[in-house]
Each structure stands twice: as structure tokens, then as C-alpha cells.
Image (cartoon, rainbow, N blue to C red):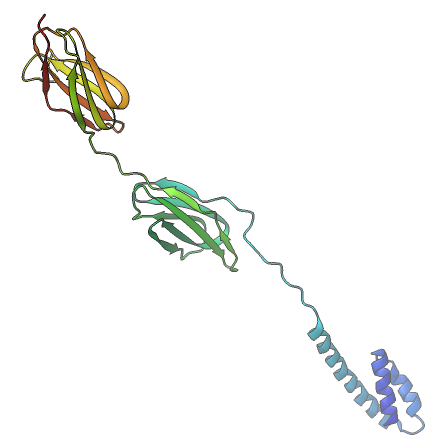
Length: 264
């Protein structure tokens, strides 16, 4: 057993098969050739087993390289809001690889809603409908690729189109003052800024489209209005109608009114 121990020590020291020759020389005096061969084979088997154990030990202690995290490429183009109506927003965006996206949108006093894609795409489009008119919405898009990498696009603030103004202006506080035999001043107010047009004449019933009807127009937008009428017929009743038109083109006509000029 001393010979075996010496051989194993040589194996551990060198890690090679060369010590088998030295072992054969030291054992010649006491062992037959057959015994030497049997023992040599046993040592070689033990050496092989030790080498396997050493390999497993090296593998268990090895530092494996950490794969670099993968992300979306250099695409950082913000989403494009392509269409906005009173109740809908259409938004488009791209990813540099196939991805699924989630779109979230919300507004003050409105709950957050979301929608998610079910297909892997590079070009994405979403129309958000059922929105309130004239409200600012925040739209957020989050894209995720097949490896789980996530990109959150910058939030988009989008205001839906205001409802069309179809409300006619109102005319109030109509006054006629500074009446002379040939002139007068007419003033009035409107509840919003409007253009002014005053029709006047001496025919009753008064019609704004009649050939004898005259008019004065003021295209400036204002709440308070004043028109100076001159070259009027003295001692006659003059009829007039006021027309007010707001910025959206909504138009209002006052009821017919009148005043009389002085005699000379």
C-alpha cells in the first residue's frame, strides 16, 4: 500500500500520467509484472475519476459571464397625434422591433382608461373614442418587446376640439339719444363681442331687404355699440333694426324699433 500511496501522491503533484513509469521501477523488486499492470490500471482509473472531480470543481467555481441587457434601439421618436376631433384622438407611434403596446389616457375628473395590443407590431395606431368635448387628456404609451424590455414614451397632452358655438348673441339696453331734426344716436349692448349693423328707414312695416332701407356697418368686435345717424328727414318717424354677429358667425336681429326726428 506504500507503493500505491506514493503513486497517488505523484498523480496529485503533477496531474499527469508520467508517474506510472516511476511506480513501475520502485515495484519491480517485490511485484510480478502482472501485478504491476493490474495496479497500474487501477491507478489510471483512479486518476480518471480524480480528473472528473477536478473538472466538476472548476465548473462549479467558474464565474459565468453576465449577458448584457438588451433594450430597444435608438428609436426615441415621440408618438404623433394625427387626428383630433370633438370626441376622439388618433395617435401613431413606432418601435424599432416588434412590440406590444399599452395606451393609457385620462383627464382631470375622469378616470384612467387603458387599451393593450394583442399583436407584435412595429407600426402602431390607436384611436381613442368616446371622449368629452373640449377637454385636455394625457396619453401615455408603454411598449414591451419579446424579451420583456420596456419603453415608456413621453406623455402627450391633447385637447379635444371644442363644441361648435351655435348660440346667438343677445341684444339689450337699446337707447336713442341726441335726437335732432336730421340726426340721432343709437346705442346698445350685446352679451358677447359682436359686429354691428343697423338698418333704418321710414317705411312701415320695416324690412331690412327693402330698396328704401339704409344701413350702417361696424365690423369691429365689441360689447358696447354706438351708431350716429345723419341726414335724416325732419319730423318723421324712423324705423330701425339692429343686427349683431359674433365671431362664429351666429347672428341676431332685434325687434323693430323707432324714433321721431324733430321739426325744424
